[in-house]
Length: 281
Ligand code: C5P
Image (cartoon, rainbow, N blue to C red; front, side, top):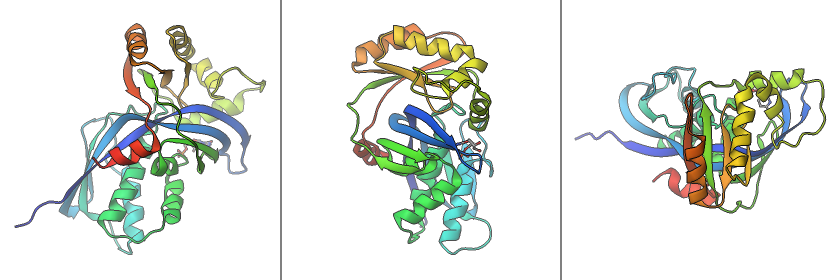
């Protein structure tokens, strides 16, 4: 009897507690000083052994299921690291997409990191953590972070990582407007800013992104008024978040922020250990 082997993993989202652009590199990428923080919001990936070509099936039709999906490119990289030739085959991935896309929550990058880790184990690929990190960095600046999780300082493109002590657990209200922001575009808007004076915001992309999408600045202010200990743009947006020490306050804020043309999610921060423990449960 053959049974399809099924491995199910969670790929958690992140927020950026802080994001400073400290320079522009010769390759056009921006040098960052950012603090990543895992949150409990997650996608679920099921890896099923098949006898056919590689496939991605996603429950969200807006999510690409071809090579445009980083899962696909992550699978190719592990396939080659395993010394195999030709197109990837023998596995299909079912993706339950819960992390909003183009929101600055790292969903695509987290899915890619989960794929790297899972397929390397499934296919018995002997790669060091360093090898995996290099492959991850090649797929995208945020991907290495998701191999780690928790509270992490990211330098360079955000891919030179220094794990920090976990922040005290907090409840997180995430507000996702009904439009996305492309990361490349957000950094290009930052390039066009003329005045580079220090801002009160904890995310240097808040101003250039907020200029194009004034609703973002309004939502951040509304989270502050609703009692957030800290509120800001996540990554390059479009999602904004507020941190609340107490669940009841977060719940009230989420209710106040509800409105048309946006989605409000209530979640919590995850420690590095919780992240690693829950990833494969
Ligand atoms: O690495 P990733 O593909 O996620 O980045 C998407 C785009 O965001 C890059 O092509 C680049 O334009 C911009 N970016 C940047 N500096 C970073 C990260 C991303 O300029 N540190």
